Length: 141
Image 1: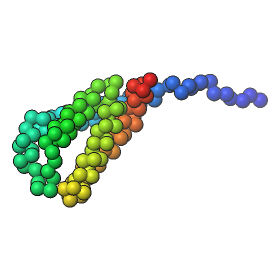
Image 2: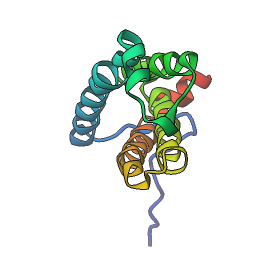
Image 3: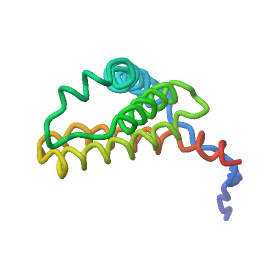
Image 4: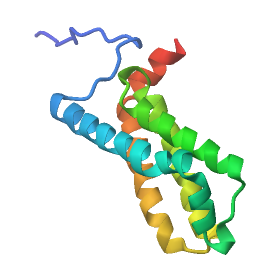
């Protein structure tokens, strides 16, 4: 009688890599969301911040420097999503940012229905970060 022994010797240094189709889906999401954060979300905060400040609701006034900082973080996150080496870390950062945006909508702007979109984005970014966790561990080393 013979017993089967596993022939594969996996070490802790083996990096997780998503399958071919999953990788394509991830890259498509990363590029689309990266462009969204560069062009539609962070870009206007850097290009026309005064207009955004003037058009903000009365209960959602934030300091000018914070608006610029958020714009820089969004543009950097959008670029980071499209750079393979830092895509996982960028997804983590954007996930945190979108959770904070949802909290701002729900509690400060008093519009909890507007918090749904940032929370969906946070979940997508968390999934991207999970799938790209090998890039995060490679940066740590």
